[in-house]
Image (cartoon, rainbow, N blue to C red; front, side, top):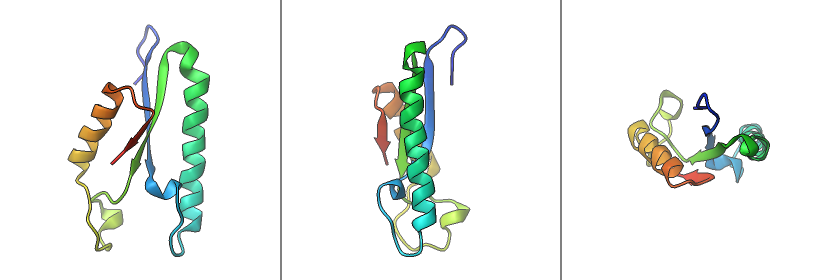
Length: 96
């Protein structure tokens, strides 16, 4: 959210796969890594306007996309709370 008088925060939802690759997931990891790079570039470009850019790196979130994955998953509600807490704590990288 960007406030009218300048300032605010932009939060990009990323993935821990922006840091690593897994079986047959190279293209997905590359795309998430590129998105992480865009997040860092926006952070630098918008800092003068008092706009913060942060990245939320999520492992498995309980969504339709992860329905077939049998691993521990975080609820979207919990991830939302983690995101808000991270922004309020002035973090640039938030990990759930």
